[in-house]
Image 1 (spheres, rainbow over the protein chains, first blue to last red):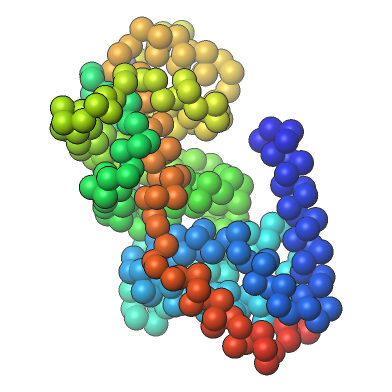
Image 2 (cartoon, rainbow over the protein chains, first blue to last red; image 1 turned 90 degrees about the vertical axis):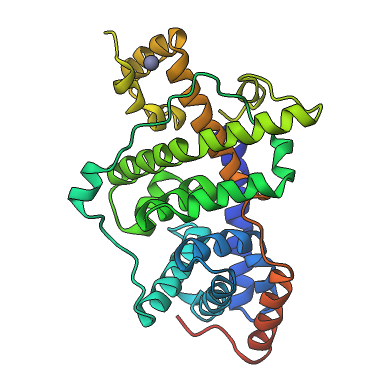
Length: 227
Length: 84
Ligand SMILES: [Zn+2]
């Protein structure tokens, strides 16, 4: 995290603390503002577990109402966002339990050891222009690949790569060690790369024939300062 | 130390997250400088991570926020948070 980001996060934390204090003191309407930045994050968390948009929406609504009612028990030692995500995970898990659709909590060791985490060896990877995301087909390839990951991997990848939670927060949320987060994340990313990279490459090649938006070889990450 | 491709693959995720020990990182970088295949694996993985973080990929349902705040409104009007 850069110094500016840290300052930004601190400012956000303190304004959140002020909002929470105001709500608890009776200014209830402020709860709308408090949760606004996290709505999409909560939806993605719920969706990763229940895998259905309508149900995920119900989960988020229930979780947000619960967060409001329990706001007095929020302790400032955790981040508010992490607290909200934890409530949402619980709601989603509760719903799955009720329907007897349990998340596979610990992967079968044997299966995990035997799974093929070898990446797809491409010699001609083409940089993906972010503009390609305007195309539904590209978005669907990514959604599909994430949706079809084994449960445990989908959870990890959603928290870390879709919502960009830290390793520590992810470990805390899932009740596993940071080391296990890293191992599972690595495997999840390799499974995604193996499946998705060849598909994306084909889609990009097909599109670069028909449009002037030609993909550039490995130029994206040089232009993106966050890596 | 010279790393084989297979060993580099084990470190792709850690490399992207900047979580490798400096020595391992240096070895990985030395390998990447000369290996097209591992470079392509790194780049494609990195790209996929960028795609997943893009808000356009996992979009909210239409009027999701509107419905959420409407439901919330009902509760906010009638209830205070529970005492801690
Ligand atoms: Zn190599």
